[in-house]
Image (cartoon, rainbow, N blue to C red; front, side):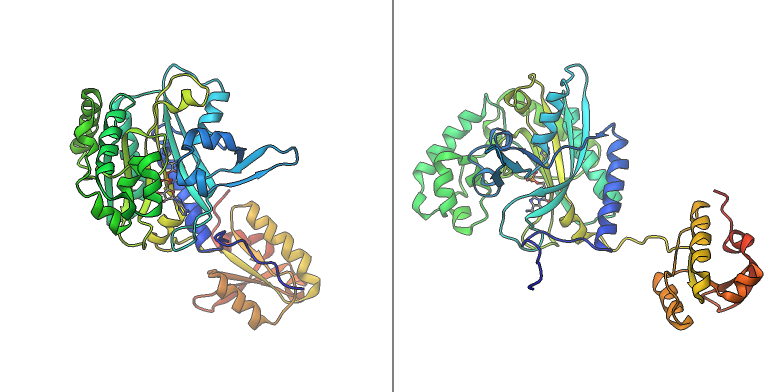
Length: 416
Ligand code: HAM
C-alpha cells in the first residue's frame, strides 16, 4: 500500500517548532492580556458569505485563495482564511455591547490556497487581536504598541514598522477617482495581469503590487495621504504623535494598502528583511464600517494579526526545562512498581519518564541522556526486595541506594 502523505502546504509541527509555537501563544496571552484582551475561540469553518462580505469579493483571498466547499446539505462553507471576520461574527451574535470597549484575542490555524514557499503556507497560524467599540486614535496607537511590545518580548530584532492611513468613506472615493484617472493615463496593458484587472475593480491594490513593471508604471501615482479629509488627517496625526512620544520608530508607507478590503484609516505592517520574499510578520488596521456591514451595530474597530510561522523563522530555539528523572527498570517484576513510583513523583511536582520494558542498563542510560535528565533512578529485583531504589547522578556518575519513600528528598523535594 502506498503511504498517505500530507496535503501540500500543510505543515506538521514537531518539537522544537511546536515548542516555539507554544511559547509564542503563551507570551501573546500574557502580553495581550495585560492590555485587557480576553481570549475567544471561534470555529475554523464559517459560511462562505461571511468572508466574501467582510474581506471583499475583489480580493485575492476571496477570489483565489479560499478553501470553499459545499457541506452535505449543499451550504457553502469556507475554512477561515483569517480570524477577524469570525471574531466579529461571534461578537455580534453575543450581543455586541455598544457601551465601552471590547478587546479580544484569538489564535489558531488559518487556510489560504496560495502557492507554498518559505513563509507562505496553505495552513498557517495567526495570533489575532481585535479592539472593538472605539475610534479613538489612542486605540490605534495602543494596538501598534501592543504588537510591538509582544514582538520585543519575543526577542525579535531588526523588524520595521510601516504605517499608513487609507482614509474613510468620505475621502476614499475622491482618492479612488484620482487613482483611476491616473491609471487611465498609463499604459495599463503593460501592467501585470492582476493589476490590469484591479485597475478597474480595486485600484488601491495596484499600489502595493510587487511586480517591477507595475512599480515603475505607478511611481508617480497620487498619494493617499494627500487626499485625506481633515478628520482623517487629524486622526492619523494623533496616532503618529502618540507613537512618536512613545519613542517608536516607523516608516510611512503610502503604498501600504493591505490585501483585505475592510480597512479604513490607520493600517500597519511589521516587516523583516531576514525571512525571504514574504516579509510581513504581522499586519492590521482599522475597519470602522465592518461590524455594521456584517449585520451588527455601527461600532468601529481595529486589530492586527501575527503570522506565527514567519515569527518562528526569526525566533531561535526555545529552551524548555529538562525532566527531573528517568526511571530505568532492570527486571520484569519491577515494571509496575516503577510506574507507580513515577506516578507518585509526578503527583508531587516532578517530571520524568519511566521505562515500559526491561532493556540493558546501557540502553536505558542512553535514553536518560537523550532526555537530558540530571538523575536516573534504577529499579531491579534486588531493590524491590529491600524497598530501595538506586539514584544515579548523570553528571558525575555517582550513585547511591535510597529508600523508595525518600526519592523526593534525593531529587530535591519541592513540596507540591
Ligand atoms: P494578513 O496581513 O492577511 O491580515 O495576515 C496577517 C499575517 O498572517 C501576515 O502578516 C503574515 O505574517 C501571516 N500570513 C498571511 N498569509 C500567510 C500564509 N499563507 N502563510 C504564512 N503566513 C501568512 C489578516 O489576516 C487580518 N485579519 C489582520 C487583522 C486583524 N486586521 C485587523 N484585525
